[in-house]
Length: 152
Length: 152
DNA sequence: GTGATTTTTTGACTTAAGTCAATTTTTAAG
DNA sequence: CTTAAAAATTGACTTAAGTCAAAAAATCAC
Image (cartoon, rainbow over all chains, first blue to last red; front, side):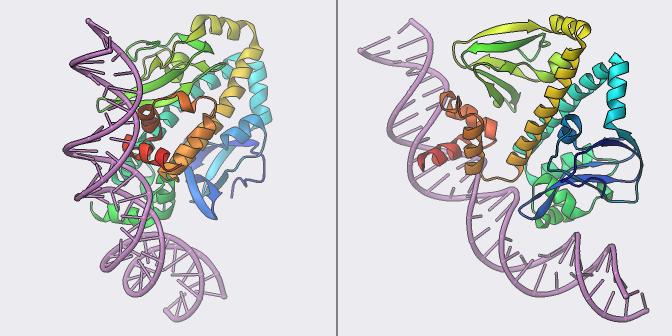
């Protein structure tokens, strides 16, 4: 486990190797929020940015190696290199776009379309993620996902 | 119409009075993305931040008055007052949280729960929005929403 | 105000996906 | 390797919500 939800997220990780998952607990079940593979950043966004607890856990699904950037060091960069703050702001703009697309993808699609969309969005790693975790990510029952996979 | 999707969003509006809706077109139908009332900011986030076209339209649902902030003027503020860039970055952090919650709310709830959640989140304006627009916002059929409203 | 158009409501029917339970397969532990 | 535990699959059944069509209500244009 990389991050427990009862802790403030003070590190942002850049994955060198392996696979991580962010999730939270709802009605006693783990609900996947997103997955991260090689060359991607992972943290608990609201916790990291606002330095307060949030509901998200981060776990390694595979043996993983990652660089770690402490929030204080990042703030140092922001303080001393204004371009960093601008870069961060622009990156968030594109991240918004992805989230808005995800919202759309969730709202108006069948379970099969959700899974297809997932396989595209996570084309490099989707086959390494256990079925149950994918199902909770998509908000569908694991049985349903199993049936979708069967018919292809 | 405040913003057409074939145009880059160069203004961010702060609503003085009235009601606006952001939406996009999918399969020939208007799908509501969000609603904004008094004392709220509205723009097309990715378009505004990255100065490129996006899919969102913005319309007034009621006769509306709003202040307008041009993106160039905002950049002037960013350039001359570093605190502004930081403020913007932190605000986005909290906005992320709201979007993540909305994703959760969409993934694991019945149509009725979605509507209840909507009425809470938009408690100040929900009663002024036509049924069809609410239905497309929630990703449910207008007939379903009509039936949900009936049984309360 | 009157007629036309759009929106909402209602009913009947269909379907996608959930639930529950049992079985099989996979993974982990000793 | 063997056993135990967890995860995935399969089948039978249920249900929430979608679709289609028609009627009623609300809105708009003249």
